[in-house]
Every structure is written in structure tokens, then in C-alpha cells.
Image 1 (tube, rainbow, N blue to C red):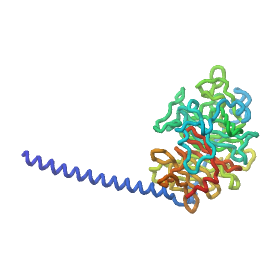
Image 2 (image 1 turned 120 degrees about the horizontal axis):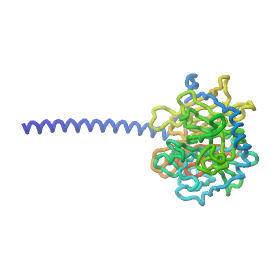
Image 3 (image 1 turned 90 degrees about the horizontal axis):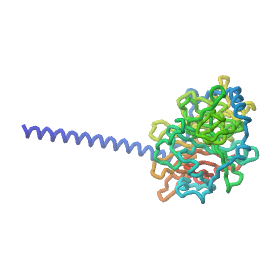
Image 4 (image 1 turned 90 degrees about the vertical axis):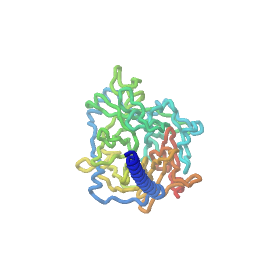
Length: 441
């Protein structure tokens, strides 16, 4: 009996080892296929594919939801006369450091190729537990000026699900605000003196209770466009909205300096910021897409708002890129054109094999996207895409395409100068679109 039992155990052991070996081979084959697929995309994502189906375009429609004017007027009456960009910049109470004064750990996030021509950093004390987001400037102005000021807007979020603070590579969410919700704020940066950038914070808010109060926008800001007097800001969709709209001529002062948000004893608070931007409208996506990044394209007629989604690297579907025409109606300055139902319908949409897209630009048929990469140093890629294929810069001894910032971030373009701005970690930087084009290999 003992000998027969030993033989049975040996047979079971051989069967188990064979099964495990077969499973390991299958997993190795699957991993090899995935790795080969990713390597192919990293080497050449191929041409953009146009989506011609009406059904596909309908999934990308935006349903407009304006905030009632009476509510905005009620809020302004309670908080005081709204101020404009000039008055906001006059209150600048922080400064950015130039690249040579930034910590080396921060500078490592800058692109390897092409190199930034200008770079600055936010201070650690002012951005601790905050996640950097999108960058914007008055994109319809040739020199990036508003009311005579050269100005940039830099978005940051705090306490939102999925956020990782600047400089944190753990992937863990940052701490929530004092009331348990997330916050989003923008730095209005006075860039008139390029050796001395100064800024102040404004909280992004959403009016509630008919304009009797406001709440914080609780979302990362991965995309932002400043067009005419409107600031279009992406939202993560947890409240059903894909975009929020802000009016840069409707900035309110927050007279109480506290961590609270909204009406408080003694006045109004903005989570520590000196100013508040109350939303004047929002948009819902009618389909299953989630907008990751946005930009302005002024090479089309009329100007257009371009958008991308952030499809994860392990997803089996391509990334969609699309555009909406912007309205020519003076009463709708800065907003997408809508049909009689109040819906913005895409003019065109495309698919690309590039995944984990973090930033987008478009110049007619040519699209530029930044994409995250999963290797240790975190440098991403910047792809130039059109109907013929995709190209990107190469760098380093291994001729890698992972030459962009670490991590890859959003993009915005100064129309007249051709300067492309982005931010990564605490670094805010710019370089010429012509240098991006000439670096493509």
C-alpha cells in the first residue's frame, strides 16, 4: 500500500508540473504577444484612421448646460463686483524659479529631445500634495496677451480620486481637502518679465443653490483651453460633466483665508486661494468617451476645439481624437457651435494606436500627442501623427523614443510665436513647435 501510494503521488506530481509548465508557456506566449504589440506601437503607431460612421460621431457629441445668469448675478451681488485678469495679476503673491535655480530632481522631468528653451519650477511648499494638470494661455491672441499682459494659466488639483502629487511616483492618491472633497485651482501667471514670473491662485468653483453658494470643482484638470474670454476645463466625469466653462472676466475675490470652500462666517473662502472662478456653464458627453486633453486649432475655418481621450496601454481598443467647430456668434464667444438641440457635434474624428495620451495639439490634418511610458525613468513620447503615419524624436544611446517629459503632460500653443508650453511635475517649460517638427525621426 505504501509503495502504490508513493507511485500515485509521483504521477500526480508529474501531472501538476506538466500543467504548470504548460501554463507558464501560455503566459510567456501571451506576454510576448503583448510586448511585441506594444513595441510595434512604440516604434510606429501607423497612420490616423478617420471615423466616418455617424453613429461613432454621435457618441462624441457635447450636450450644453449653461448656468443661469440670475444665479451668477446673485453670486456676484453677494461677493462683490467681479474682477478681470489685470486685477488678478496685480495680486500676484508667489514667484516661479528659473530652471538654474530649480532642484535637480525637478529638472530631470524636462524633455530630453527636443530640449526646452525656457523652464521654470513651482516651489515645493506651494504645491505639496497637489497634482499638476493642464496649461493654457490666450490662444486666439498672436502674442499670448490679455488686456496687455502676457499671461499663462497653470492648473493643479488636490484630493481628487486618482491624483498623484507633484514629485510622487507611488501612484497613491493625495490627501483630501479639509471637508473630504477634492479641489482644483489655477495659477494666473504674469509672464511679462520672462526672468521673473509671478502668480496667484484662483479656485475653480461651481455655483450651487441658485448662486447662493459655490462648491469646489472636484476633478483633475487634464485639459484646458483659453479662447476669447472663456476658459474651457476638462472634468473627470464623476458628476456627469466632461467640460466646465469659466469666464476670465468673472473672477471673484475671496475675502476669508481658510481651507473651507464657499460661504463662511465673515464672507467667502476659496480653500486658501485669493480668487474664485465660478463656472458659467458645462458640457456632458452623450457617449462613453471621456475627454483627456483639449487644445485650440486656429488653422481651421472656423477655429476648432480638438480633444483626445486617455485609453490605457493595456486596452484593446485605439484612442480617439476629434474636433468641434467654435462658434462665430458674438453672443457665444469662446464656445463650441451647437445645433438647435444645444449639442456640439464633432466635425471629424480619428483613431490612433497611441495609448495613454496625456496631451494633444492639432494643426489641420497634423496631430501632436504626448503619451505616457511605463519604464522606470517615466519619460514619455511625443508623436506627430497624420494620414501617412507617425513620427517622434529619438534620443540616448539606445535610440529610444521616450524623449519627452517625465511624466508626459498637456500641450498648448502660442499662435504667433510658435511656442509650445507644457508642464511635468513642478516644471513649467516651453519650446518651439519648429524644434518639435525638426526632431522627428
